[in-house]
Length: 148
Image 1 (cartoon, rainbow, N blue to C red):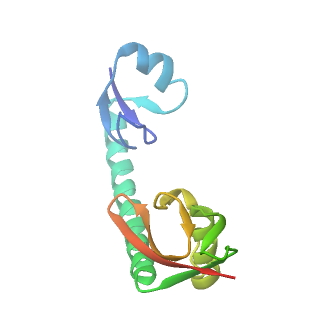
Image 2: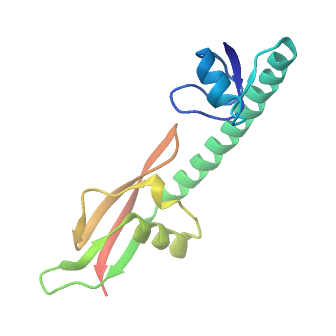
């Protein structure tokens, strides 16, 4: 059965793609939930407009991510935390801590789920946190963990 996807589905395709699925999967899962429509001649032209809109939105998202990346790569984000005498932290620095520090110091709101913090930051020093804001845009954010 040929269907046109109305939303992105992992392992199947993106919005506007025309895909071949098993009859039962299409009839019992995709169509009732509104995730896909049957691929008729009129719907195929609608799928082309879905793909164009998706491509335009994707390009805009990529440009916004690149702008944020160029801003953050040049900066060093400072995070002040409580620490012991030997430089060990009481707790650890998490992705949420990095996101809130970036927001307070630059005004850029990052989703903590798009940040990858190395192992566990449990001591003072300089680290690099990887941010993946778009599937084409990945960059490092330099952070400096200092004592309060």
